[in-house]
Image 1 (cartoon, rainbow, N blue to C red):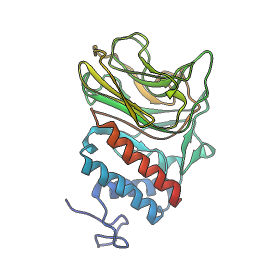
Image 2: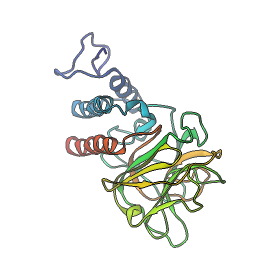
Image 3: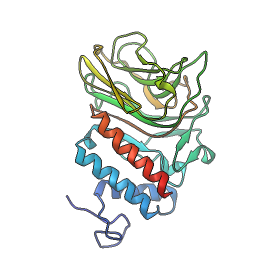
Length: 271
């Protein structure tokens, strides 16, 4: 696989002796174009290490759509997709963004449309994951859940992950239980959160670096937009702060957790 310099148009294959993966280089150049200026060398290096690590772990192709909502200099840069369709920003402004911590929701108007639908072919009924990285936990509300990522409108099989009114992590991955699956207390913790279905009867849920297994059966899929910071239909807004999300096929959540946690820790150190 060819490796390229992360700065165009230099005709060499390295910057300061660091080789760049072509996917990382392409992403960095798109972020820099959106930002209107170059990223620091150490930030480029951290992104490159993340991409190379995901490829080495065999999880890169499972990341159908993903955004690193940190590292970039601007909100526009933070919403450049690493992979997949470009998301749509709804009401996030410069003051909502931290280069090391990501975007802060307001539990009212701010959300991101992923530009994907719950029943898109890229996320099969028995082969799908969603994830996010939370840097500031949402508040709890006596009347409404706080959505991290997903689509909760309608019936049948959906992808969602939220903090419910008691602060439990509540998820659904194409499963049939009416209220989804809950893990007490994990809706208001920080760090990586995700769930991944690898068969009609098995879902892995990960939060606080711990996997929980659910044997709930999948069901046919509903249609509806997938969003971050709300439920895809202007409800269940979140006031969490998040710096990453992904959608895709079944994935080893522990490996993704390790890679994105390392990236966020590195960005926190070098910016």
